[in-house]
Image 1 (cartoon, helix red, strand yellow):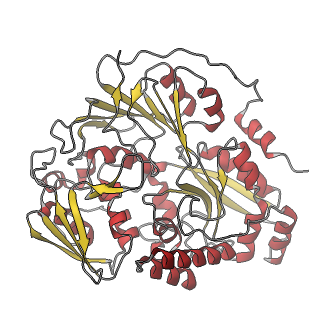
Image 2 (cartoon, helix red, strand yellow; image 1 turned 60 degrees about the vertical axis):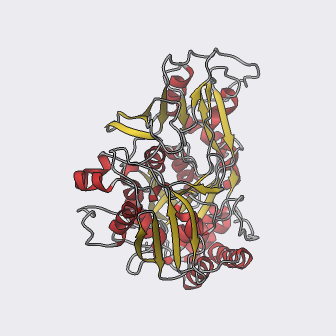
Image 3 (cartoon, helix red, strand yellow; image 1 turned 180 degrees about the horizontal axis):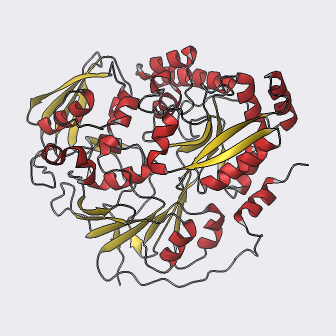
Length: 534
C-alpha cells in the first residue's frame, strides 16, 4: 500500500503536525547602530569573477560588485541603461552598437571605456587572448553564445565610448542576454594583475567594492562612494554562508542576520506572524526538475523516461513539500513567461509505470542514482528531502534509488558533464525570454560532456533543436511564441526530464530594513537598502 506523501514528508522531517499559530508573537530586534547589513545565505560563492560563475549564490554577490551594459530594473524585468546609455542594431540585425556611460571608474581607479568592454568579452571569445588564463571556463558565454562557432563573431571599440558587436547570425534576445550578471564588466587591469586568481579579487564598477573573502566564513563588501548611480546607503555588507535553514531563521529573529534567503516553506505561515521578521514572497520565475541522463543506458529508452514521469505524484509534492505554495510544472517554462504551450499533464499512474518498465525490459525494475545538491535552492528549499521523496516514490514501481549528495561548488559542472544517472535540476530565469529557459536547458548546443553544459538531461533532438534555433533568430514575438509552443509539445512527448514545480520565491528581512525587494531573476540588489531609523 502506498504511503501518503504528506505522512512521508513529516516522517522525513522527523516532526509531527503542530497546532497552527494564529496570533502575532515575538519582538522586533534592535537594528545595528551603524549602516551595516548582514546577509545569511544557504552557501558560499564559488567564485567572484562573473564570467567564470554559473550559480545563484555567486551571482547574488557579483550583482553588487559589477555592472553590465544594460540591466533589469530593481523589481521587474524591464531593461534600463547601466554602463551603456543607449544601444541599437543594424537593419540586418547583425551589428549591435552600444554607446557607453562616460566618467565611470573601476574600483581600482582605472577608467571604464570601450576597450575595457572589448577586453572583457574578447577573453571569453578568443582562446589565445592574453587575459584568458589556465583553468578559465566561461560557462554562460558558452551556453548563451556558443563556441566554435560563437554567435558573437567579433567586437571592436569604435571610439573610447562606442562598442560594436558583430554577430554571425541574428539573436533576437541579444540585449536581454547582456543584462545577465554573468556578463558583468571586470577591470582589465585587475585581470592582468591577478591572473588565474582573479576570481578571488573582484574589481568592478558596482555599487559595492570588495573588502575580503574568507571561504565558507564570510564575504565583506563596502559602499562605493563614487558609484555612477549614487552611493548606497548601506556602508558595509557581510555575506555569511549558513547552510541550515533553521539556523538562518533563528539568527534573523535574534537580529544577528538582517536578510536571509532559502526560507523553509513549512515555516512561512508562522514566520509571517513573527514580529521579529518581515516575510517577502512572490511567484518564482524558476523550475525544479528531475534530470534524466538521456545518454545513460536506462534513460536512453523513452519508455523508461515515461515510466518515471508516471511514477511521481507531483501534486502531492507541491502540496506537502512546498506547503501548497508551488505550482506543478508541465514545462521548463515558468507560467509568467510568454510562449506557453497547452500541454496535457503527466498522469500519476504507478501501475502504468510498472507496465512501461516491463515493456522496456525491466519487469523487476532496476538500480540507479539520484544526485542532489548540498545547498538549498529557490526551487529546492531542502534538496535532500526532495531526493528522499523521489526515492520512495520510484521504489514503489521497482526502481531502487541510491541518493548522492554533491557539493554545490562542483554540482553543475559534474551534472553538465553527464556523470549522473538522475539528478535534481533547476533553473532561475536570467531574462524574461523563453530562449533563456528552453534553449539553455534543452538544446543540443548545450550538451557538452567535456566542459559541462547547461542541458543536464544531455537531450538531443533535431526537431526541437530546429525550432529553438529558428525562434532565437526571429524578431516578431508572435512567430517566436509559436515555435516555442511547438518545441514544448515535442519535449513533453519525449520527456527527457520531468518538470516538478515552479517554486515561490521567498525571503525574510529585519522589519526595519527598507528598500529590499525580491527580484524575478532571484538576484540580490542591495543598492537601495537602508535602515529605517527613529
